[in-house]
Length: 322
Ligand code: ACO
Image 1 (cartoon, rainbow, N blue to C red):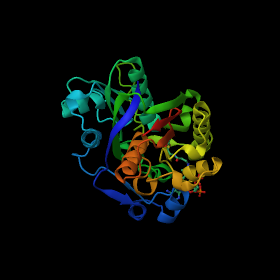
Image 2: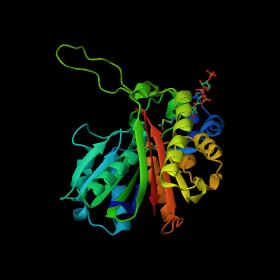
Image 3: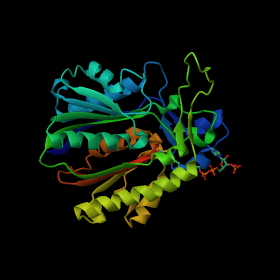
Image 4: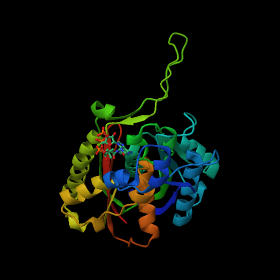
């Protein structure tokens, strides 16, 4: 049995910050940001009531309703995130409690922007093994809390949000998937966070915000994502044009157009929301999938190719029959 997506949902914070707004609080401009990234605005949490957990639960409830599944029917909940509210309990366990999903096993996956794909692949492997039947997968981030708002080269890129899917063990759904990691490249996108505070080591003062070598990330993305896509197409014997939509991690519109060019495909096959949402890391692919689904653009039997890359370094792709 394979993972078939039977419902989607998403949740974006109420408030969005435009590039023009950012240019009033730092030395930047709409022209600089939009021309280099395609981003025009991003949603940011703006009150203590909006958290990683609340975004995740709202997206999850929407996906459950879309799927017609009750929380008690779930036997697995996976949350992909690098911006949990707590170190423990995991966001997945907190979601389980909030939903009343009393029969589920719940845990988080940390694979940065590839996290949703890693979670989807994990669910597919559980289904193939027969270990469970019905899963909720959430990608959620409040990256705004781990971003250095004094580093204009990084902070303008990211946004907050959550996307979720409900997957059921089925004869059809996931066709093929690929994933990988290269820890030797970890330094180009890093968030150190905690400093040691035991009796032998003095407390550090590094706040541990996200830092990035943007040009190296760009080169990694435009090499790795087409490789993943070509590899899945070769595995399945499909042509690039057989795929209805390529739903790529929404980091930067220039990365997306460069990948479309490399694959010699029309840009219409690459839906994008990066202009409105910025880079929402693990949430970007499920938010985009929910938007495409809710806009009525998907028909049964459509072939979708999801692919992303992220800190770690990590990468992945999944080819699905809708
Ligand atoms: N506004 C105005 N000027 C800026 C800003 C800003 N927000 N940020 C940087 N600059 C300035 C720099 O200071 C520099 O000025 P200088 O030449 O006087 O020193 C100049 O702009 C050029 O800076 P670069 O960093 O060389 O700009 P570049 O053209 O490489 O664009 C960018 C930077 C947009 C980050 C690009 O490298 C990129 O798109 N990289 C991909 C990174 C990415 O998408 N990461 C996503 C996160 S990772 C993930 O999702 C897995």
